[in-house]
Image (cartoon, rainbow, N blue to C red; front, top):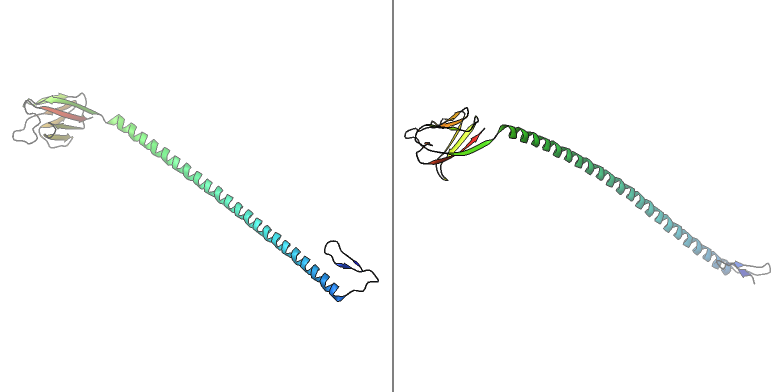
Length: 181
C-alpha cells in the first residue's frame, strides 16, 4: 500500500499497488476543497484591498475638503478683518471730524424781562433754552423764527415779546441753555 502526501493526505501509490476509483474521487474532492478555500481567501483579500482603497480615497477626499474649508474660512476671516478695519477707520474719521466741529456749552441765566446778551465766547449754530423740568423750551438755529432768541457772533440774546408763548426772559426765573458751537 502506498503513502499519502503530507499536506492534503492525497494518495501516493507504489508501482505494485492497485488503485481504486474512489481513491481518485477522494483526492480530487480534497483538491477541489483546497482550491475553493484558496479562492475564497483571495476574494476576501481582494475585497479588503478594495475596502482599503475606498477608505484611502475617502480619507484623501475628506482631507481635501477640510483643506478647502480651512482655506475658505481663512479667506472669510481675512475679508471680515479687512471690513472691520475699514469700518474702524471710517468711525475714527467721523469721530475726528465730529470732535473738531461740535462742542456743547451749557449754562444758566436769570430772566430780567429786559433784553439781555449771554456771552459764551463762541458763535453757536443752535441754542436750546428751557425753564424747569416741564417748562418752556425754545430751540433757535440760524434760520429759526423765534423772536425772543437771537444768535450773535459770541453767544445769544434773549428778549421779551409781549403775549408770546416763547418768552424766555421772565423776571425771577432761572433758565438753562445748551449752545452747539
